[in-house]
Amino acid sequence: MPRASATAVALAALLLPAAPALAALANQASVEDLARTSDAVVRGKVVSQTSRWVGKRIVTDVDVQTSALWRGNAPQRVKVTVPGGVMGDLGQRVDGMASFTEGEDVVVFLARGSDGRWRVNGAAQGKFTVEAADARPDLGQVRFLRSDVKSGERAAERMSVAELERRVKEAR
Image 1 (cartoon, helix red, strand yellow):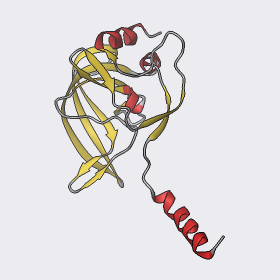
Image 2 (spheres, one colour; image 1 turned 180 degrees about the horizontal axis):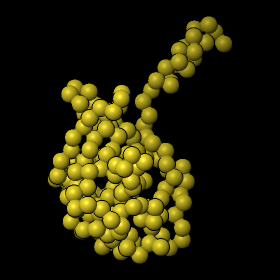
Image 3 (cartoon, helix red, strand yellow; image 1 turned 45 degrees about the vertical axis):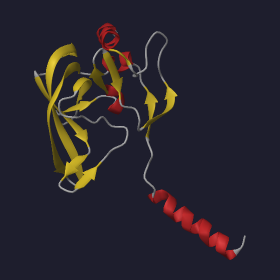
Image 4 (cartoon, one colour; image 1 turned 90 degrees about the vertical axis):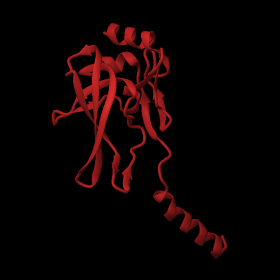
C-alpha cells in the first residue's frame, strides 16, 4: 500500500471512534413484557420539565400529571427522571432514551430505580405519545438487534390507545 494511502487509512481509523452514534441498539420488547416488568403504567400529561447536573451528566426531571392508572401504583403527579437535557448553552442527548415535551399526552411504563426515583422502563420503548386515538413510541434513534416478542404479544409500536390499554391491563 502506498504511504499516502496507509496514512489516510490510519487517520480514518483514529477518527472513526470519535464519530457520534447514529442510534442506540436494543432488543425489541412487547407491550406485555414492558407491562409485566413495570412498577406502574400511567397515562397523563407532561406539565413541566427541569434539567439538572448529576456529576458530569445532565438529567431531566419530568412531571407527569396522571389522568389514568393502567397498572400498579403511582402518585397523581409522577416525577420521572430521564438522562439528557439542556443546561444553559449545553445540551446532552442520549439516543434510545425517552424524551418528553411540555403539554404532551403520554403513556409511560414506569420502574423505580435503586435511588427511589421513577424512570422509564424500556427506554424509548416505554414511553408512548398519544395523539387523538393513536399511541406511538419515538423509536427513531433505536435499532433493534433482535425481536423478543412472544406469540400473541405485540411489539412496542404505533397502535390505538384502546389496544395499548387493553394489552397493558391484560398482561400476565
